Amino acid sequence: MPRFRETIPVDDYVIDVLLRDIIGHDKQPAAWLLYIYLYGQAARKQWKPVVASLRALADATGLSKSAVQTAMQNLRRRELVVTVAPGPRATPTHFVQRHWRSDA
Image (tube, rainbow, N blue to C red; front, side, top):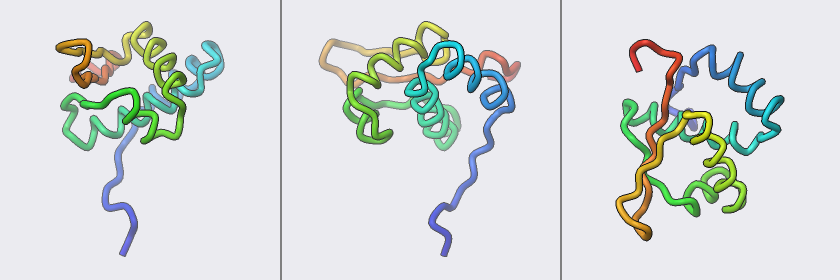
């Protein structure tokens, strides 16, 4: 029995443009890793938002909490992720943006 049951298609733009921009230009490989993780989670949920704390994202990606925090700032600045938190202690909701798609 295969370990993974589902394949998630990734847009060409993510591989051809974002990879080079985030890792090469911004020098933020953690942001690339975090975006790919959030992209996969959102795709599995039919593009519904991902509810996760910084600690949960750190545990899921293997990054430190501070690396996740810095990566999220980069992703928000690039408008690749929109984060909404109803309160200071509430778990944030992350909306993965795909502005290059006309149907997104």
